[in-house]
Amino acid sequence: MTDVGIGADRIQIGPRFAVSFHRTLRIPDDGRVYPLPPGLGTFPIRRVADFGERVPAAWRDTGGAFIAMHQREALWLGFHGASWKPNAVKVAIGGINALTGEPDGPELGRDPQNYLVAPAQPWLDGIKTGTGSVRQFVAMPLGQGYTVEAALTGDERRGGLQITVFEPRPGRFPDAPPPAPSPSSGPMRSLAAGMGIGAGGVMRQKVYPDPHGVETWDEASRVTVSVHIANSLRYREITGEDPPPTPIDAATYTEHGLPWFALYDEERGDIAPSERLAGASTIAARDAERDAEDAGRTSVDIPEPQVRKIPGGPAEGRPGSSPPRPR
Image (cartoon, rainbow, N blue to C red; front, side, top):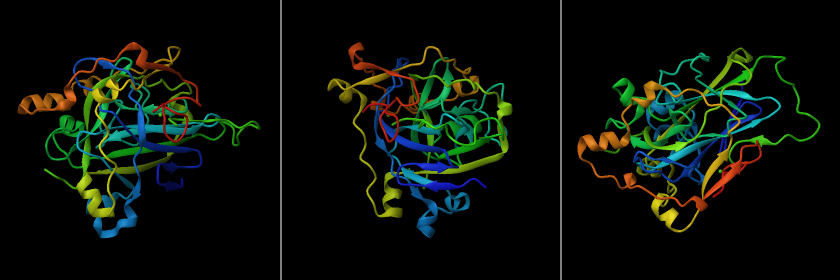
């Protein structure tokens, strides 16, 4: 059975793959397509099993880990893997596949591709709704109809994120790394018990087609880890710790001349967007239905010199704890 290790800033699944959860700016949902926002540090990760009866019963049933997020706060996932022996990875939000919008299941799909490969995929910022773009992952309370789970199923029970990792079949890749060190990939860029993920603004990001083929991956090797999301109050009640502060907004960040990012990956393909996800209600749409005000919709003009081009190689990227997506 594949080992799972839950550390302070990443979850290790198997011998080579790890995932980290990065704080970032929430981009406006205003009809524009934005560059990649920066990484603002990783979310602290806690093991559900370490907190006994203090966590909700539903969390104890699935185990895994939890992080703290403020309402309407955004995050991105950073993937850390070995170039000499990659992994297939499925990402679900509230039990909904983040690439296809279909209910998450154990199978890997070829058409549409319902998984990514790490490496070379360094990160994922949102649900796959457009060609060359995604809609940002944004935390919202369960039970208010804002999550993608609610939009596509009419219910909000699961929340959080689910990460499933697959090993390659024997003989597809080397069993040991090459003599020279191989760099790892990934970014180095009403109160309820839990929270889910809603669809935010649009940013430029590709999800690369699998260059190895779906038959490369051993479905029997899959391991799924649940990552629950606690709101700031519940996190403090469970752990006795303060959650990370709310990040500054995108407008303030840009006014101070700080950088946004674009990835040099023109040579890489992009899987087709999901019509199912593209049709799901966004946070902005739900706010409009309720005449709710949200400062996060305010447009931001980003001067071209503030958009830094970064290489797409395995040792480059956004800031964080492995190849950086700069701060």
